[in-house]
Image (cartoon, rainbow, N blue to C red; front, side):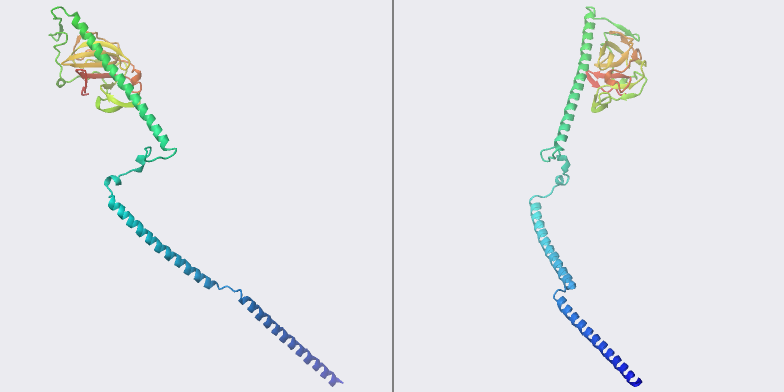
Length: 318
């Protein structure tokens, strides 16, 4: 009985082993089959990226080469065209100095919103400058005309006041002068400084100088000596007092006849100490520096000194 039982157990084990082997073989074959089917299915849809990348690089290189060739051709055409233009119209030094910004505001260069504005501003400034220059020229002409007219009037009065013999005389340093006609001034003799002060504005008829109060440049036929109010003013040379007058620009003033056509005008004065027709020596007190007129308010208190010869401005040399 025991022997038969052992045999039965051995048979069962063999059957189980065989069954297991069969199942394993079946599963293995099934897996292989499924894998092959899947491989066949994927083969129709697999992408070769390396091949695509190589093809793309070839295309890019081909396009780049084509553009280079096209660029060389266009550059050659442009160079040839430019060469023909330069040969027909050679470049000059004036062409090299051309500044395109210099044309802004002209008909050659128009910048909307900018050109019109700049042109308008420029025209406005130019027009304002013309008006100011015109006003100053008129004021200067009026001043010169006023001085000349006053001098002529005084000379006529002196001539009418002479005796019939025309021998009215005045004593100067022991000598005699006939109505100032024997005064004999020359630039070589020089002039003494009329006031103690530095030159504020020099004589300038060759180039314009800046007048702070007027805020503009103009010619200056006189010398302005900076000096405090009440500073004494003296005659720069011997002369005859032609006129004592008042002017809007230079205030109270005195004009002396120095002889030989020379005349000296002192402006911005107060407390004038001489009278018309007086024959005075160099250094004689004429008056004192007054407060500046509205034409020189920013320049400050000063003495206005102008020298003329035959009514033409002359540099006094200060």
